[in-house]
Image 1 (tube, rainbow, N blue to C red):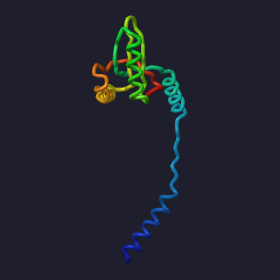
Image 2 (cartoon, one colour):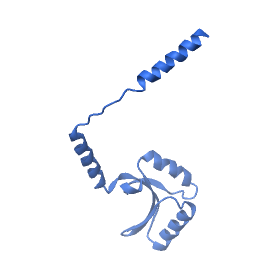
Image 3 (cartoon, one colour):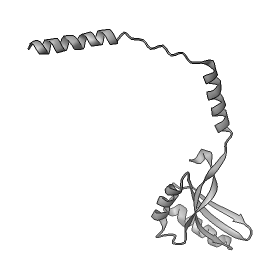
Image 4 (cartoon, rainbow, N blue to C red):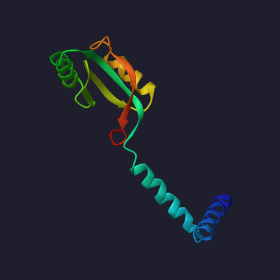
Length: 128
């Protein structure tokens, strides 16, 4: 019983002593300017190196559009892009920062799109 009372007394003193400590944080003014410069630099970045999965590259726009529509019907939450670089139409999907993220998604869609592969691409920094 004495030990319990002693423990409670010690705990109460601990709260009284340490509950009144105030921490004062002095920040150098240069830290704010560096932080602002860092934020402004990242605001200007629009694209970064990343990965997408290319589903097809065909010469027919109708064929590419069909693949695009099939993909969007199956995965509406994933970004898809239909682009044209003479002479082919390409359908690429996803905005992946790392190759392993792209690979995980590729394994999910491999059954529907067996010819799909991972490719490097510039991805929008804002869409990640």
